[in-house]
Image 1 (spheres, one colour):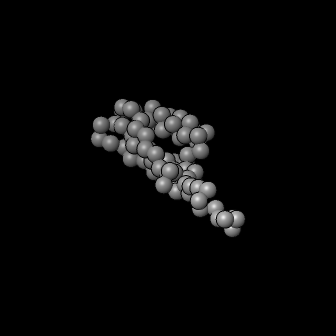
Image 2 (tube, helix red, strand yellow):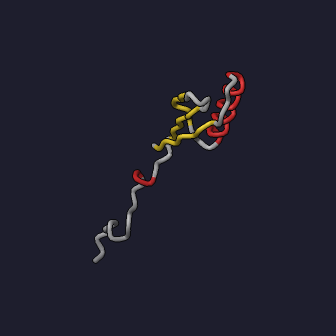
Image 3 (cartoon, one colour):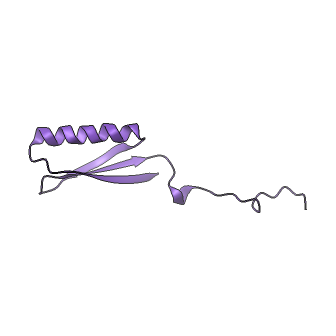
Length: 73
């Protein structure tokens, strides 16, 4: 699982903020991310946190030829 944070630019009006958040959430969903939470800052920006179930680099297991022992030495 991996997470990604996105900042939505200055949107002082609630309707514009909601539209921007919705647009970004829909865009990220097409990329396989799910919106987990968000926060609105005092400077009228939003921080969106997304997650995906796709493995990140730390979770990818790498098997080498040396690891695959076929018993034929």
